Length: 409
Image (cartoon, rainbow, N blue to C red; front, side, top):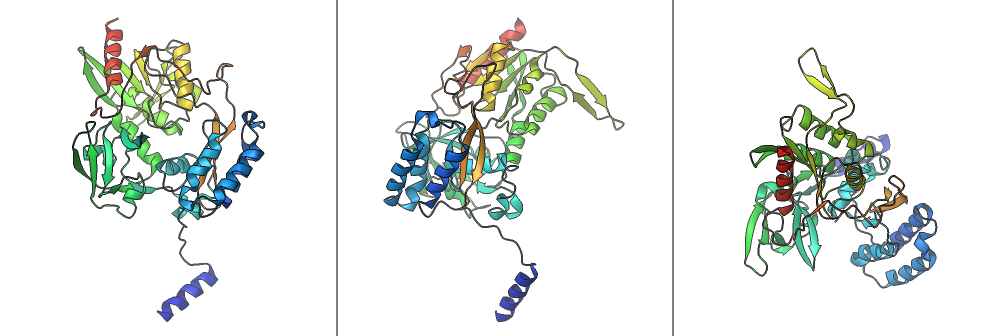
């Protein structure tokens, strides 16, 4: 033991000791609340804070923090941020799945901070990949990206997740230290009905890679009214690679021979660029490059067949800009419900304890119009009650019918 200790001391002196990243943790004191307040004070997009007295708000919440248990501080900080009434403004800790998603999305901006908390700066966590919402104190599944453990387990959208291994379900905590082990989920599929169990095996998830793989795996042909309708769900648009996956799917992949396309932008993350809509503008040439090996590559890809856009209240950020342009310039019908209205430009700040602040730092106008707080309404309204929906998707069913009818003319 002493020899091992001496070896570690020598390695430390030589700078050769192995690097082990610290683990981000929820805040242990109210000091992080003040750190959040200062960052907002210096970087929030609106120097007038929407007419709110930000200094007074800070004083109020500092007083509240003195009597708040450390475990309750994240909620208190988010209450403080909520006073601003702005999208893209939230406080996240390592107990939130969105913490890892945002850390990966903003990994470029956080490249100097990430290695302090993640080995080699590579963002990952152990989980199952179920996207959940809490409604009236109950947790419901609203998204199951393909290829992740939750999608393979038999979970369905609309399932209420009651427990994991007999304890309260937490998207991250429930699976910490259980990579590769079987976890028993207790679920309920009907309101007030009996519970049942499902086995799921958590794995290490790298968010950006997982979303890209899920987008590629979602691409498929669905038969509807004698037509071949292509479908793809874009879980995230926070990297150009996601748009390339769409382009490849329609030019050389599983959707290339579809009669019509359903472009599903419900849920997930934004980050899209307005230029992504060029894909659906029939004007302009599409160039095919044929390599010596025979491999082909399409440049300036174009989809010149009918397309239907799926949107809902989970369509937000850059995806809303795409929905706005898609509707305004008449590329096709929009099916679903109104988008969320979260259209400010944001960045992320990693705080001293490894927690994360997502903050709106710029206002946004689209063709001179402010979408923040308004969103984009569909052309065909299709409500969807998530709770206990047993995997049904009335919005997709309507989109399939609309797409098939558009092919029939």
